Length: 379
Image (cartoon, helix red, strand yellow):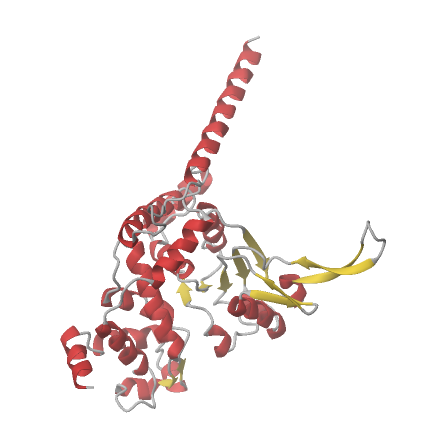
């Protein structure tokens, strides 16, 4: 009799936990951005609410993710900038878990594609299937959508598949649609691709060409955790876990935030700083520093400028500010630019990488507001 009572109590407790989780999820789905009586959104008020939402997202991610603060920030900035990210790190650093957890907190659909040498483009985009029409009895081709038709797509080890398959994914990233059988199928916004690369194994891989790397807004380096973070990981994974992840933002909130990013003001001197900074990476420029001419074969293109400005806007509102600053630009210089420049043999022989080059540029390119304002006045 005692056993039955205990079992009944456990059942009641489980039911109450499920009901509480459902109630929390329903509350979280309510939009945090509300237009006023005229149908307009107060941008400053929206920034405050979305800054609070960012903190809530990080709190939820802490249930399954330990550390990775900068990586989380850069992934969120890329999403809200309508960009894509390339994650590079050794196996076992929870890259897949991070992406799936972010998808849950943002109430977005998530698909993971394991890239292999035999993966075909149709395995990503979908294919046409011959089916019988039950009403007419005729046979016709219908398009069966592939895993690319998700809000967040994880392209795991993208460099392990041939260029033809890589191109199919990258075309969808750029055009936000898939073409099949003479028809175009639009991808539902928001749409974000996060690809991963393993920097250790290069045998049997197909390196992404520079033109395709340039389509990724960020190249995000995932490093080893600190000692305390590693201890936290052991406690979290081998224990009972942090609980069920709750949804913080919905699709409409994310789309509204993406539109809000475009309205963030940027001062003229920041545009001039970004132009000077990116142009300094090109060895053919007259004013490029000497170490650029010594170590760099080709520098960053205009897309680096665009991503620095857009990313700075998104970073500003995620940190509760409605204006982009030089600090925002400088904080994103590494993820935006590290995969957009080519180093020569001299750099490789001396152990100089792109992060080192960008770091020196951050020290040498002046960021004095008055300097750029005077240049604009004399132009």
